[in-house]
Image (cartoon, rainbow, N blue to C red; front, side):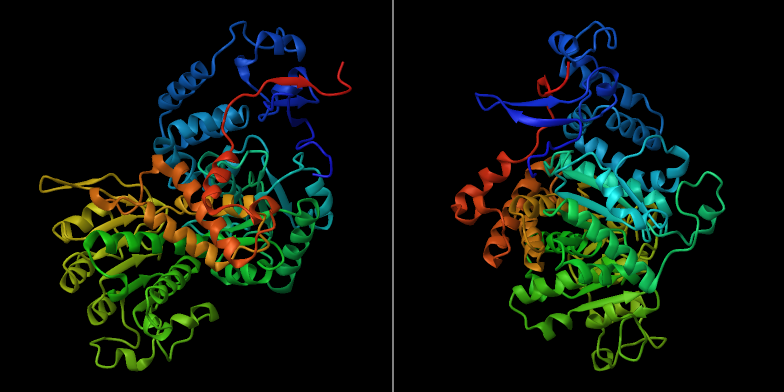
Length: 579
């Protein structure tokens, strides 16, 4: 980037044989304090002499395998999921290469710890467990110096950032500065599963205040202590941030994360043409749900275009899923109006139907009054149970954040409509799930096809094991982001998001009853999703990476894999000017 090293403290170089090494501009104890450079006890004897580390590390030169074994052993000694989360975050803050090596090796075990559901508790307690700064914090106190704040970031070649204003974290709402934990967790997955180097990503907290009284009253709260900005003041803040971040990082891709429904759609539409960006809660959730539904239909031998879909929850996630399902039905051959007639969306007050008041982003999914004529309902708007019964729903998707809303009566109504109903309680964290998979399986007598948003154990019912797939956005966003970064896209298009969904569905082997791949396959899934995203970007003409413009289609997969970062130590050399 303009001849600058990739980081203030080091640069990545290649020797005469093409092998990579790190040219470092710091030595001794300072080097050990930089997590991207620290190798702990694995510094070689030559590096210890060269870099002023003699006497600062134990005499034994540890192997990478020894280090990974020690970390995993200590991880298993932690008593609670939160303790394990704190332990892994501490490791990340002192030795990033080792952190990612361990995470990648134990991804299925550790994903629920660094991400949902445990990250929800880490968000709530962020001020209590705060240890070391990570990422970029832009607040109302510093927005006037946004350019200086961005310039202080020691990384010169950031390609992807996750930015949150923490207004709607998972299913737990406004969490103020604590949302930084979500951005950090998401980027850990980008690196482990998506292969984006840790020096190419940046977590960002956009602290515009909080409306949560217990945070404002908490003496140890680390965020800005005032009510959230709104209206013009809010968008002026975001405008200033976008100007500052793109000035330093012109090739950056932004993932907007955990914005409330009041701002999520407006932010996405305001900036997606200015900077390549997407909203994971809207688009990633939609792609994930569509992929799962396609897999479920294939598993039960039903045509997607014949399904009737009920979506419980009309926030950013619910609206994103509705959009993805409608687009999928259109792609399957239905006219748009016919597709909309097969998708029923409910918010907290019931079915979206003519005659009700609702936010603009819900408007596309409002049913005509004629569509419910003759329905047996008790009030002005059909309830969830009434909608399931009267619409004869075959697919039920939960994005409401309301635990228990998929009760036995609802599940039994789904079974009356379909021999193998598809029921996905997708809300996170676990405590907000619309139902537990074991209840759904029991109430449906093993008929329902189930996937959940948070990890649940497979269900054993009447001697048979029913796999529970995890409908996790982590099957979508790492590959979507990686593809967008590698292609240097001018825009993250809806077509690219859709390509990610269909790639995930095609990758899922449903013969064992799973709707999503095992979490352990997430890295290979991300590579395949990135390939599909790049193909679509090339088709739509939004690719700016010259090396991809004339690439043979068969070469895209190799290109993607060749550019995925691997967690391994590189040899060090002293930078110019160091004694």
